[in-house]
Structures are given as C-alpha cells and as structure tokens.
Length: 270
Image (cartoon, rainbow, N blue to C red; front, side, top):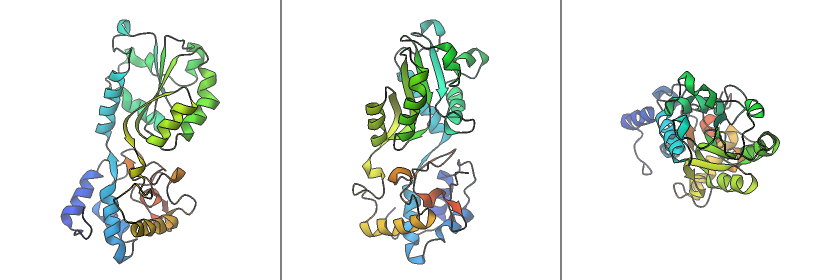
C-alpha cells in the first residue's frame, strides 16, 4: 500500500487472511506485537514490509507440483505409458525437513497417495539398489532454493555418487531465485524446474528493489541486525520476504522469522 496508509482494522484483517495458513497461527494480536517492536516513526515501514510478503499457500504448492509434473517429458500416471522408471525422492535427507514435507504434499497434489504408487516415492538409500539408468528419471522434491548452495553441495557429496548410471535428474522446486537456478544449472547435472522465479528486485536491499527508499532500506537493515547480527539480510544476503505456509526460509529477512528474547518474528522457523 501507499506510504502513510492507515493501519486500520481492514488492513489487519487482510494480513490475517493472507497469513492464516501459516503453521503457527498469526493473529491480530501477534501482528500488533510485532509492529510494536518498531519505533512509532517506523510503524508505516513495518506495515509495508508485511504488505510486501509473498505468502505461498499449500494450495499454491499443490497447483505448482501438478503443473510441473505434467510438464515433464516422458511422464504418465499410467505405468505402461511412462518412459523408463520414475523415482520421486525428498531432496533433504532427514524426516521433518522441507523435502520430506514436500514429498507428502506432492503425493496428495498429484493424486498418488494409494498403495500402488508407493514404489514411486523412495528415499536416497533406495536409489542404491534401484540403480536408475539412462532411460530412468529421478525427481528430487523441495520447496525453495535461495542461493543454490545446498543443491550444489548435495549433488557433489551425495547424488553424483548415487546416480552413477546416468539417469535424468530433475530438481523440482516451488520457488527459486534466478541466482540459485543459474548456479545449479552451471555447477551440477541437475535439471532445475520451478513454479516461480525471484529476481534481484525481490531482494529488498538490492538497488533493483523499488518498493523501499534507500533510507527505508537502511532502517530495515538496522532492525534486521537486531534480529540476527550474523545474517541481517537473510542467509546468503538474499533479502527476501517470502514465507511458505509450512515454514519461512532463512533466506528471508530475520525480522520475519527470528525468535529470541531480543526479537519475536511472526513466522518462527522452529
């Protein structure tokens, strides 16, 4: 909204409606407490930061997964119509991490929750015995890539050794930054596909971002330093304001998700 727009009941109601799907309830009272952490003169800046958030709902995740799967050449829900074998693998290795969550969401979104589809959803360790070959496709599932570091490291340290027979390997993401996609395509053999791409303009501290003035960016950075002195611009200095319904990425600015005595974010990660 415009600078100086009223922070009234309608605005609070809109925020509550947008953030309703977060795993930890975001109530009007919590939003008020979050804004109160800012000086009175900066309350408008705090409000416009909330306005700028891209909130990714579970419904959007489902839609993206369905669309991305249908776009992959060689895929068909009928086994005898597919080209080669297909394996859907959580990108992260530990239960409860984003890849594991995304695998569950993927199966629901694509209508593959029945037992007959169980053999399609496997874990990293299962790939050793399956030995996917050149005619097969391995789809790694995750929600987000901000810098590409995790994807590149996982490829070099894990998947490159697991997939020695040369299958097609797709990294399926809901959202990624342009920088991450370029790095993944340059440094790995992963074929990264995603629903939406974030550019430099989505980094609120980047000169390409026009939503905030240089003075406002400096003020936000001061608050972010109070929330996380080590990574005030988010992990990898990504400066993002993106929040998924199941978790806020650490690439987003820390005033959104930091949770300690000095600062309480609206979207805690733990």
